Length: 227
Ligand SMILES: Nc1ncnc2c1ncn2[C@@H]1O[C@H](COP(=O)(O)OP(=O)(O)O)[C@@H](O)[C@H]1O
Ligand SMILES: [Mg+2]
Picture 1: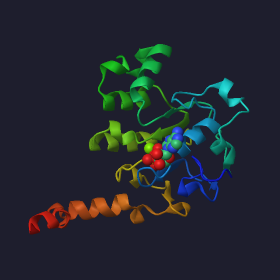
Picture 2 (picture 1 turned 120 degrees about the vertical axis):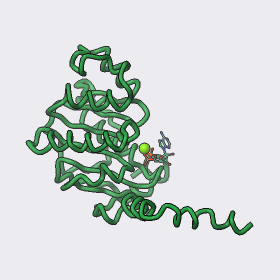
Picture 3 (picture 1 turned 135 degrees about the vertical axis):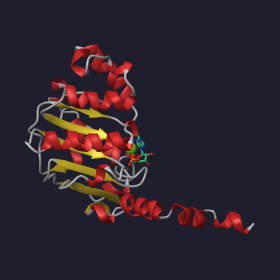
C-alpha cells in the first residue's frame, strides 16, 4: 500500500480492506472523517457508477485506470445488479438535475424532482422509478424526516426481500441502522469491523439521550453552571 498519503492514511484502511457483503443491506458507520464517503466512492467506482453520483456508466466500467483505493479493495462480492445509482451526500440537487435531464419526469410521480421537497423527491425516486438495482447511498437521512426514514425502511424492505435490490448505505441514523438483518460495518482506528446495532454509538448515545435529555444536557453544560 501507498504509505501515508490519502486515502491510505485513513486509519480504517491502513491494514487493507477486505469486505464481505453477505446481506442485501449493508450499513457503514463511523465518526465524521473516518472514511465512509471515501469507501463508498471506491465501491461505486468498482461497480461502474459515475463517481460524481448517478447511474452506471459502461464506459467507466471498462476503464483500467482505477483509483488506488479501488485497486486496493478486496471484495469477496461483485454486484449482480445492472441498474441502480450512487448518491453522494452533498449532491442530491445535482443528481435530481441529472435525472430530470435524462428521464421522463412523469416517472417520478408526475412532478420534476426540483418541484418537490428534498425528502419528497427522494422517496418519489424509489417509489416510482427504481426496482431492481444496486443503491449506494451516502447519508440519505439528510433528506428524510424521521417519518420518512420509516417510509424509506419500508421501501428497502419491499425491494430487498424479493432479492431485487442491494443497498450499501453510509449513515448516522439510528432509525435506518435498525433495519433487520442488515450487516453493519464500523470504521475504527484498527480497521473496519462488523458490529451489532446495539453496540453502535448511534444507538447507545441516542437511546441514552432520549431516555433523559435533561440529565445528558446537565452533564454537558456542567462546567458552565459552575462558573
Ligand atoms: N480528496 C481528498 N484528499 C485528501 N484527503 C481527503 C480527500 N477526501 C477526503 N479526505 C480526508 O479523508 C478522511 C475521510 O473522509 P470521508 O471519507 O469524507 O469521511 P466520512 O465520510 O466518514 O466523514 C477525512 O480526514 C477527509 O478530510
Ligand atoms: Mg461522508
